[in-house]
Image 1 (cartoon, rainbow, N blue to C red):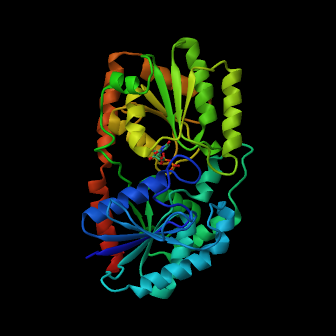
Image 2 (image 1 turned 90 degrees about the vertical axis):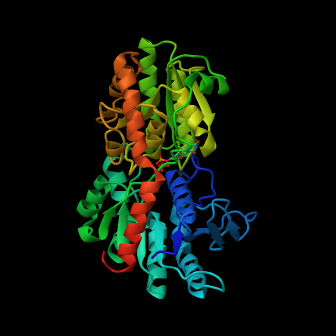
Image 3 (image 1 turned 120 degrees about the horizontal axis):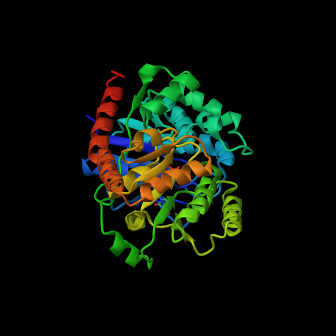
Length: 411
Ligand code: UDP
């Protein structure tokens, strides 16, 4: 029986605000999964690097799990390439803490690391403690490289090398979808018997349908066709494609508006946002494109409810939480036909999957959702049904079975 789980999330904390910098779906996933395990009486400790001196070393969250901030390297956010230098020190301190146990604390049953950096850390901790290690990558370097926007730098070789080590050295790799599991096997030669699939959940109590007019009123918006983009602003997310597609949509629907929720992320996020603002100005979208900035996760349902369609033209996406959240609210999604989006969005049922990144193809799909016919109502129903597949209850039960299989050696 699983009683205590240690999560490793070296490069970002579940306490960080998602939607900007390095914080996104993984932070939401770690936070909600830890909370869901804690609700079942399982002790969860999340180890993350201390980047903010004002945060205490140990924080007990209201959700019932603990976060331990490990002092490894400067107490400030560091670019990912520099974090490699601190993996050893981070792993040393986690190992000490895990071995120490301490009075009244349960013994750890399993380590679950998130992202390649934490997986790498996990290999060290596993070696010394002998604990089983499960790793969720959330994104994979080789998959990102396969579809990156022309002109974007490729993923560094040390990342690919570390991913390979983690794949070989972990007891189990947890993929979000069958598709990710195939990527692990085909692009990295992972042993299929060590890869398992467990799609993330979303908070279905938060992401549930609501009144569109009321949501628009709360956001101070008038009643016009509304396209929504939610995500970190970086080349990977394809906001440039979304804005160009919206520009063409306005030829047909001059009243339409687009909201952008999220902030710059990664080394060229600020530059990316600036270029897209320039593109919007060139397309004459001033006043029609609303930059909403980063929004607290709990406020996102209002944005999903206020919109008519969510656009997700990501270059790659291992899952695509925003698409699942939108569907939970009953919002149809127009998404790139890649990675996890193929699984989250049911093409023609809960929205549309678009092949490639040509803006006119996205415009066409947006118009199909916005056309106001009976089909639109069907899409809303389809989105709701698709969103209901992703509750945390099911995801947590399945994960606990996986953990049990790993700890008793049957995986
Ligand atoms: N998000 C948020 N506020 C924002 C923008 C995004 O809370 O301003 C959240 C969003 O609700 C989702 C996550 O960030 O849960 C993004 O996850 P996704 O899987 O779509 O992308 P990732 O960031 O993992 O690449």
